[in-house]
Length: 390
Ligand SMILES: Cc1ncc(COP(=O)(O)O)c(C=O)c1O
Image (tube, rainbow, N blue to C red; front, side, top):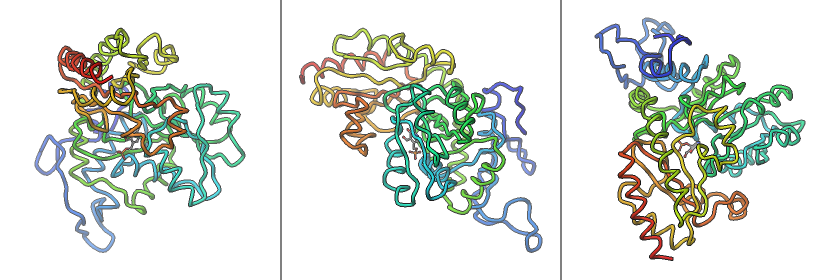
């Protein structure tokens, strides 16, 4: 189905980019595993010639992804990091990128350990004040890169305000929308040039695929990213594309349940005497609670909190959980808990972690869609274990 902007996101998630298979009538998109495609004569084919350049299952996924973010183009990659790197390869040596200070550790690593050697420089700044963004733009700045909500501190950045600044300065704006998903936030509608996702997270939603994507309505950029997808080759396999397509069908219901559960647990945590602070955009105590209300349709399924008692307490807490699994990643149906200082954000320097407030007691929860009463009981039992370890 070609995408129709008038349809709701839950309808698009199930139908966009997909129609019953013309050969068999199969309602679900066939997984086309072939790496090569027959040609009627040299250069004469049905739209696909080689699996890295294009694949029918990947095309269906890209059609659906474009519709979900309201984009003209979607380009799928073999991981979120593959998507990020491919976007940044659209820059040239000598270009500068302004990056939100609280990005995923792997994104920081791409800037800090990979692109630096190719002459692409980056400055990391807190983007909560858009004026600071305007002041930090340099003559050689070509792109602004931000995550909102950010990882793991759940800071929010004002996409519309930063997009206006970026447009005036003729700089592109990339928004990593992994935490929010298009169900809660659509950055292109707010003026961003492109949206990036780790589809490993909510879009696939079942913790069984690693994949990424970029969506944009800029034709030149879309063409360039399709070229980089083919030329660099960080492509997802056809089965992974099928799995993400399948996961996307329940994106809306999943995300709404994640938000429902996270709201309840954030309030429970905020009232707990072993918790020093809770960071959740849905709480009035969140510094950008008002922006969350304007920019997002819901505060998301991620909660970060500071447990009193430092490393002994946080380690005991994570070990005591029975339903929450102590693991990296997020956005799956199952609840996960992790310690960013030791796990997802270990690639940051200790100074960067300190500046961001990522201490040894900081725990990040990816709240799943289990029965919320069970999740709450699980946390309660872990608090008992953490108290004993202090
Ligand atoms: C916000 C965000 N962006 C990008 C990535 C990288 O994605 P992937 O692990 O699929 O390469 C992650 C991974 O955790 C992430 O959390």
